[in-house]
Image (cartoon, rainbow, N blue to C red; front, side, top):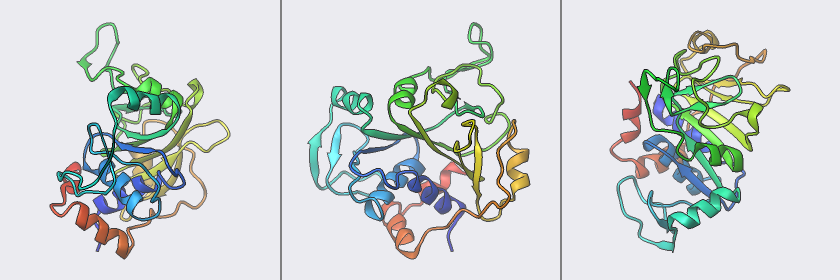
Length: 239
């Protein structure tokens, strides 16, 4: 039987479906890294993956293991070339996200005198303006899903985002495929109801009449996940 973590990894992997030969970059914890590797080993074999630093990997190692086959060197300047030319699909995190997908990883409160200083904008502007971008948010709550972010780090559909693909949380899958480019509920995970997602969101979502369940992993996908993450590090991203 699959866990909530398994469902979320598969949902994140689905964001890379149809990408072809571009760099799939999961930023942060095990879930996004596993998602890119799972997609490559199953339904999207042309994806490019890396070791988390500067090596293009010919094989797909388990978490924490070094690649057995190295296909190339990817120094930072070459990585930036991929970003600026739309050859990278990144899955980022967000401390805040609004109805249009503007995200904040910089500060909480007034930017001139914030209550909390976070990472800074980092590469969020370039990624969201030039490349397909998705988000993994492990704790869906009104503190994260806010009507307006305190500072825009990554741009949303109302500010010229290139392609906001998907938002996956511990409760649901969402996207921005509405006439106004606002957030839409795509599916709810097994054990979650639409009302749970509504209660955890600080703004009004676009909700279709019939919201399906997020699919779980196939037998093949579960076998791949267990091989890539035998210690189940993916479970640690959930409370």
